[in-house]
Amino acid sequence: MPKLKSKKGVMKRFKRSKTGKIKYYAGGKSHLATNKKTKRIRSLRRAKTIDGAPEKKYLRRMMPYA
Image (cartoon, rainbow, N blue to C red; front, side, top):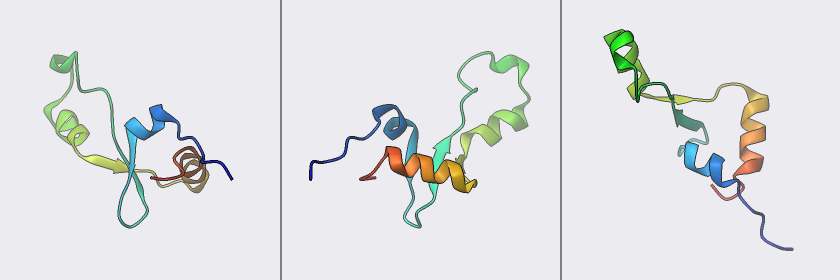
């Protein structure tokens, strides 16, 4: 059985935590920050997790060895 290929774009954007959750960092904080509230920019610093089951299943299939 050949090795499965990972989707490189997904591997760069998402990581799997030790508990098996998929985490990512939200975009939208790199430019035009003067228009955004400080609270919003602070909340964008933190990592977020994927909660929906269909999305989790889809992403796990795209990163088989992560």
